Image 1: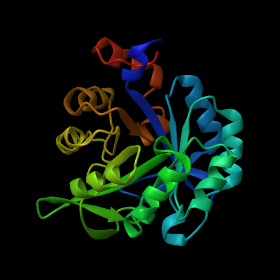
Image 2: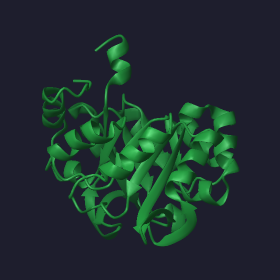
Image 3: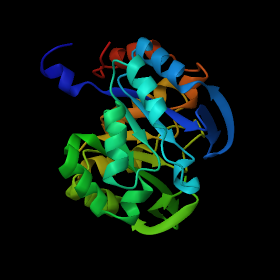
Length: 257
């Protein structure tokens, strides 16, 4: 597609959770199993028609491990689509190193909660479009609260309020993961996604719960998010991106084919 339609195309984003240089996937962030070499997987997804990729170094936050620059360089050599990297980014220097290694965007989660000024600093240093704020949310006593450390630690931040604050401080995009839905393959949290999407002006990437092609159709139709992200359904070949995009297109959802 060319012209204005391209601006409206919904994005399909495989997410690669990386631990010790391998791609892994678990249910609700535990019981991790190996899903292959991230660089090879990335190249396969690009060929299949993924619009972007997200790499999350899942050990970086709670084991204080710096994100692997070498992997980013290797991925950048292989890929012709944008990719985001997250995990363990706590200061401008971390982001700069990843950007220089070839990442297109960086994702911050815990570090942004602990130091909201970091969002502003990154947006000023590199531009708003470079900064993705990842938010892990869980329903507790009828309210959605921001959680850290892969959903293990509850904060005092209400999810919707935090996302609005992140937008005000310069986040270019929100990657919203429902921890209640993550790994369940029962569908995205369309109600929450719609509510938040209606209240902010920056793109939302929906994450957590994809189990079928219909779930993608549903999240675009019901919540009108800009992008949908998934991991295991792509890694284990349960959903093939060309099939998914053809089905979305048949349902009148604009995608890059």
